[in-house]
Length: 322
Image (cartoon, rainbow, N blue to C red; front, top):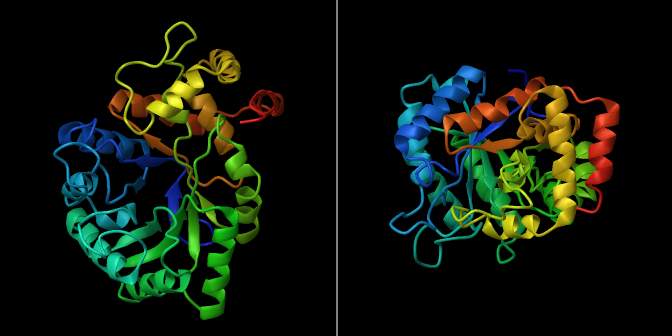
């Protein structure tokens, strides 16, 4: 699989990133290992997780995904993999249990490294903003971790454009590491939040973009129809989105075009939705999650799909307003 630089860094990542939120949740350890094996065989070298995955499940404490990745990774050549994780959410009780303070981040990274069974994280991302902690404190803490060799690059997730640019300014003024990546919510059915200001900002500042939910929580795979609304097994984190989309005729109009183009290319609908995103030069690697190897393989072929100018224009026009 083709590899590209992550933003302005020299680190090479595959054009698709394997999302590991399902590991230890809807995919047990055995299935998770199979998914990572299949990803490796396909040429994916980029895995994204977070320390809180999947703390929201009864009986889980958080860190389940990282732990599974660590057990798999110890039998691989570490230097061949780009491992990205995130910190910010609550992982323990007490005044430092969550947030982007120095106290939380220093401990959170140590805990992630233990679970991942590695000496360093390639990309450490702040999961979402923390209004209670000054940017300087967060960036100085990340700087200390970079200097200690525990993280190599830093990134942001769910940051609005103004805060991303302010963060870059703080890094420049204080000569601190700057965010080299952004993880936004982006898909054919969720465009405005990223495209309005974040997209030109990332292009201008050469920030790598690794969007999450590029298939709109599975809606763009075509498994939902006008006749059969959201299924009963919809996951906690995406049920609201699926309910919203299945009640929106505009979303089905977009899906109709995706299916039409998928039939023309003889590929699954998921590959068209991903190919549309990969045609955007600002995008580095969409994050694809999977609960099964079959789901992963259904998406991987997107890197070989080339949409015409007319097909891209049709998708863009139909999805205007999202």
